[in-house]
Length: 342
Image 1 (spheres, rainbow, N blue to C red):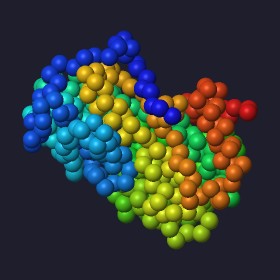
Image 2 (cartoon, helix red, strand yellow):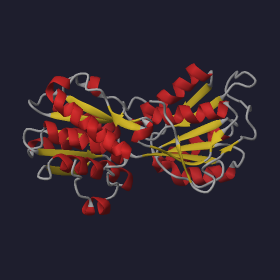
Image 3 (cartoon, rainbow, N blue to C red):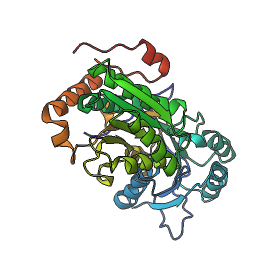
């Protein structure tokens, strides 16, 4: 399915022609060559999740659009401003801030460099030179929860988050609602690691959830989620659901599916628009119907899941796309949400 972005806000219906395109100070960039920079969130490249997904979009821009790219990795939040400033001094066509934690720093830097154009993933920064891209994580997580409830033998599943913040609550409540769409009696335990980076803690918390009776854990915890994958490898009749990137091959047969956020699509779409001398302005939302989120194709687990369950999850997917099902995105929404009779 071809991706289409959705615009929000008063100026959301229009394209904005960029001023200042074509200024490149990365190495030996050719005249007219697209120049892109990226600042990663903590966890950096190699997290096999959020940052790696964004980087795939940047690499795809290099391969498909001939862009010149540069990445600065953030080891802690104190690196955000220095990294954003360093790239801003290069006068690039676009600088990507990967992660909601950069919203305040980007808001400050974007005002200091009003001619520089920025994009932020997973947050909204309301500045004229910033395009914001967010995702309907609750849509994909609803599918993950439905699948977990269909496959669970114990009728007891769990959610493991990174930090307990509104963004991760979208994953959590969507997952719980999806499970209850299948079986309102399904028990869903919830724990938060308190970090997106601590792999050891992720493994420890996942073991607590498995030992507590859950046979499927949805690990939306960034790099810390690798710990949950490590935890499930030696467990019989237990599974993990991966997140952000396709993590299925990290433990073939033990990762039921991955709820992929196509951050790579957002990064590439924005770069492609710039190359066409147009930029997406305002707030872009990437949802299930736009292929912005979704489950992987059960390459290693289709036999475990079963054809009838796969078809049932696909039917729910179509109901979300059509609007028949509207997954909640907040704890308050979950409190009033009721399963839909299908």
